[in-house]
Image (cartoon, rainbow, N blue to C red):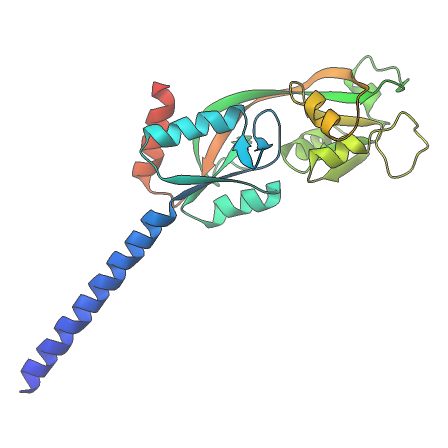
Length: 238
């Protein structure tokens, strides 16, 4: 009798374990894969409640070709970056593949390339001929790889924010106006639209092409190899 009881108990336990594992797998499959990003037009941004942008279009097509059920979410860059580091079911874009980040993710790309310029308002009267001429000015910059790039080049007078709309709204031609910025670092092709949305209609380019670099899809180190391979092959075929 004890042997029969033990056998029945083991069988019930095995069925429960199998059922729990299957339920977990189904839940993961239903939940899908997450692609996270920030507000950074024209690469990735929110439009009419949907995640849009050049990079977003590329990643969406990659996911479709890889037969990957997924969702797209825009959040502040530090949260998006942390999400991709913590969850094996997440990738973050548009991500700069810097030397210090190289070992932190599985990389797919490049998915697009961006160019950055410095913008001011029409009343900005500073004379800028080279990069060093920019350093005395208050420069608004979004809290991502741009901050590290500028600091590495000796820029110290930075005003850092999470939302590009806030930075555009802070632009002023008056260097004595407190709580504002003289210049704003933004995507060359997306700055005008952001500025208009922030109520700034007299935007002008002060220094063109201060930074140009490739952007990648960065996936968690524990993301399944077959998922990374499928996404990479989808990008290569596009």
